[in-house]
Amino acid sequence: MTYWKWLPIIVGCLTATGSTNSIRNDPDWTRRLSSEIEQINAATPGEMGVYIKNLTDGSDLSYQASRNWYLSSTTKIPIAIVLLQEVERGGLRLSQKITLQSSDRIDGAGTLLHQKIGATFSLRELLKRMIIESDSTATNMLVRLLGRSRLNAGIEALAGDGFGPVTDITEVRREAYSELHPRARELTNLDFIEIKKSGPPAARLNTFLRKLRITREELQASTIEDAFERYYRKNTNSGTLEAFGKLLENLFTGRLLNKVHTGMLLEHLNRIETGEKRIKAGLHADTPFAQKTGTQINRICNVGIVHPKESEGWVVAACLENFQNQSQAEKALTNLGQALETALSPQTATAALGRTQKPGKPEPPV
Image 1 (tube, rainbow, N blue to C red):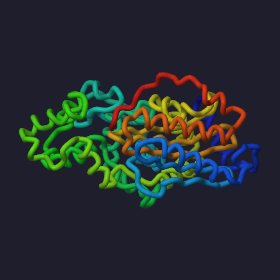
Image 2 (image 1 turned 120 degrees about the horizontal axis):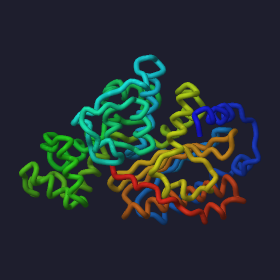
Image 3 (image 1 turned 60 degrees about the horizontal axis):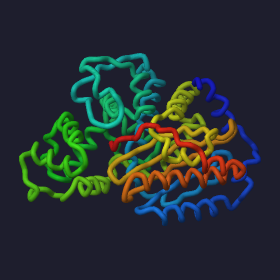
Image 4 (image 1 turned 135 degrees about the horizontal axis):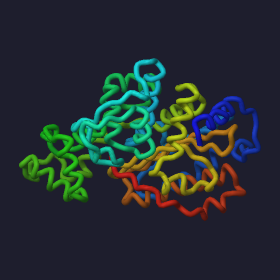
């Protein structure tokens, strides 16, 4: 799909006056879907939050969506919006290039980590990599360019107090690992790459201890998982699902960016490589879903816009926390997709249940 093919969808969502869609004809859709979400939550270890909004008539559903959730890589959507707004103001150009620095490299999704230091990349390419591949190094480069102060001022303008401070990916590592020991702030991005390469959390902890030359008795948290739980409570890179839903609504309806940039970002979101086993797996194969995923230790998210027809859009934002394993949480998101598809089009629900998942790329924790 080219950027211009999104324009009828964007405009249609603003001008639609009616539809035969089942949810819109059912004033109790929020009650019925809330009941299904409660069942999904009850069957899944941990907690789940969901926000869904019908962009045609404004009806919405909020299930544990007014509290803060750790958003992980879904924060790359507001980063992209702030970047494109800077382009529209004339401060940046998508064609301009920036240089990969050693300090930009960080573990996580994407391939820029392995590119030669000194290589240059256009903002257009970095934006594409950040969204489609969820490239962590590309994210670091764009956040460095924007500056944390300008980035967060832009996000605050987008969402008010609905989001906490957003950082680059390396700062996530420093903040989380400093919950193990404050000297974690002495570690470089390359140290964190080496720690991640060690393997599962227990092995990473051993590498962490070795690098700082400290003992387990000196740790403030007993495990990496415990350290991340302490980090999450700071509400950095966090936000409410209601605020994220409003952000997605304003993006889809063209209130944040011009038509070309709106279409560009929606196209990238429609092509992400990491969402095949989440909400999308429960939707009908022909139901378009412009989405972004986020993954971190004991946290996953999936946010996006379901747009089954050119005149319709449905915002959905969902996160889970404290589950036993990621496959359980992804299954819950698949079940959410099935419940939403059933509500959208009962006649296609059976097909959605039996759709074959594409392999896709698993998203590493960031």
